Image (cartoon, rainbow, N blue to C red):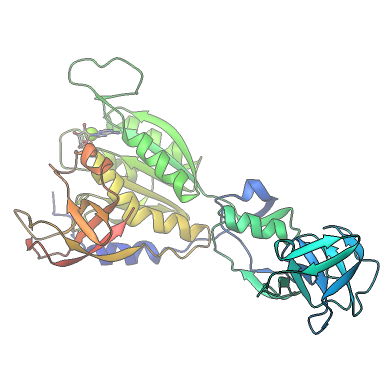
Length: 394
Ligand code: AMP
Ligand code: MG
């Protein structure tokens, strides 16, 4: 068999990034939009605040008024407009969020006043004006959220405050997960000798959901060539992106790359200079995309993070930039061979990156203690403690 061409991490990322995708959108109720990506720019229909209002419970008065005590002309609650204008020598009792009465340009908070027989006296200095001016946060017509932004709780709150009950969002792509491996058993079932639990189905489903896409667990296929072709063909009908786990290496029972071809997929690369995850396959057929990932659980996880997540986000109109920050490595790093770009689990806190005991691409417990990946450049075999490194947060 001829050697498969080996491409760099950067080249693999470029090939995936060049794959044309189309985002489609739908308008959904605000809470259904949580964790989705905005399909359009949002322009504020309102000024914020909507009117001049009090920022305190207190008394609205004229700041230039030299009076020492003020006649209270009315009480203004939030939600009810004032009826009377404030004039020299008078004030209005006003609540937080209530509309400022005509004439008044300052509020003295209640704690700085005394009130007796309908007369208010200021008894302590209040340095603040305690007024929120109309439009000081936002002008009507101002761009408030851009297409592609993720709708987290703060963005949901902002849209609600602007009176929007729905939001235009990208439709999450359907991402199918097909696991291969005759040794796999579903969690919850007993294990027979030689069997292991299927964790990749779960890690992928969890990662897909975190990204905002829709994960579809399409089941497990045993290590059998024809059964794999059949499963791929059926799965491609059900999703826009298909992720296969396992069966991409050089073993006697690794049928996935050949089965992908047999199912009509065009393979764009089959080998990436990355550790873990070298035998990663990227393929497509008529606008649909398929990945074949090596079955070792850390490989599956890392390859999703590095190569698949950016594609899923792009399909939802979001240009993903991973959070990469400098950190000081707390102990020496070394590896046996330095050819490939490596991603190594690290625990990174306050600018310090701690290497974790890591035995390689099956070591999920190590990954579970990590919050970031140390990226080791191709060619680099050692990094000394105290060096500044780039870590990519998970
Ligand atoms: P493969 O890529 O199929 O050669 O599998 C490589 C290693 O990953 C083997 O030790 C498999 O048992 C293991 N593995 C494959 N698929 C899974 C899975 N879905 N969950 C956990 N481990 C897996
Ligand atoms: Mg296998």
